[in-house]
Amino acid sequence: MLALGKLLELTLAGREPAEKTQLTVEGVRMRWLSEGALEVRPPEARDNGLDLLLSAGIHGNETAPIELLDRLLHDIARGDLKPRARILFLFGNPEAIRKGERFVEQDVNRLFNGRHEQSSGSEALRACELERLAASFFSLPDRQRLHYDLHTAIRGSKIEQFALYPWKEDRQHSRQELARLRAAGMEAVLLQNKPSIVFSAYTYDKLGAEAFTLELGKARPFGQNSGVNVSLLEARLKQIIEGTEPELTEAALDGLQLYSVAREIIKHSDSFRLNLPADVENFSELEVGYLLAEDIANTRWIIEEEGARIIFPNPRVKNGLRAGILVVPTTDENLA
Ligand SMILES: O=C(O)CCC(=O)N[C@@H](CCC(=O)O)C(=O)O
Ligand SMILES: [Zn+2]
Image 1 (cartoon, rainbow, N blue to C red):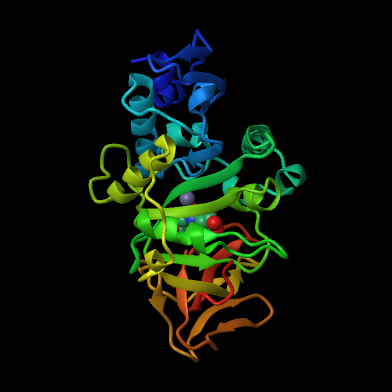
Image 2: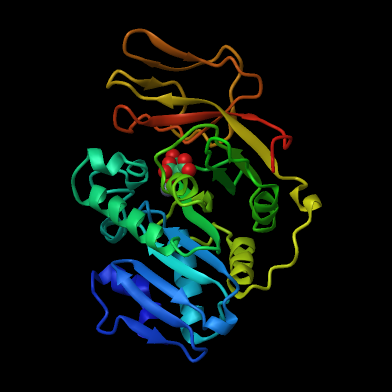
């Protein structure tokens, strides 16, 4: 296999490849751009006009998505997978991946859309570099742009695999993309309704990509991901890469649960208390009247919404950051 197919090995070892560009037997060009960043370009005659950004390891301990991208890259480097799409593979936070930690000093996925400029340190620099790599990749005119930022969650979930769909003023969420996610095994989608500082929100808002954060199961160390079943997503990604995806019909949305954000729980101070068991699962339902959280100056988060569920509860985030999202079921009436 070509050495550049071993991007993960290079990244784990903190090494630069001797040769920065290599050609597969299929004439596919692989180009190492920077640590954890590799562009794959099909021969011009095979190019189908799709630019696909696949990122993982924005959180260093979320290894199942990293292993999935590693398998796809191996297949491309061996000539077993024959891309018609142009692809950018990104391992988001190499230092944290090497340490097996979510982050080293600060969460890279809270540093996009301008936030890295107000910060310092290696993770702020990395967020800036990821924005630059994505912007350069998505700079070619008249091409389709798609970004999947792959994650696993800190805790178990009542809905194992789900997507978060960013928001931008005057832009509608796409039914076609939701059908594609359903076919890729996602059981639910959270439709965001305000701007955000995560990677997929940057590529959606600033670069015009269809972009999603995908949650694929519970985070575990390398080699311990047999409980994370990515087979439907992996099969779909291969079809997208090879341009062999079956046509999507509207009916394919059937069974996909849609949620919208009712409220984001922001931790304001060290007095923040979250009134949930440590092992509570994502999408656990909360009853109207339930006292969810308390914070400084008698701030109280009481559930007012029927059918509210909690995702990503985390009282240990830094002050000023999201300590959970309250979501409620929604319908497909506003989709494009
Ligand atoms: O399990 C958790 O609490 C967090 C899992 C995770 O990393 N989720 C992403 C979601 C990004 C988004 O809001 O689109 C994150 O929190 O960065
Ligand atoms: Zn994550």
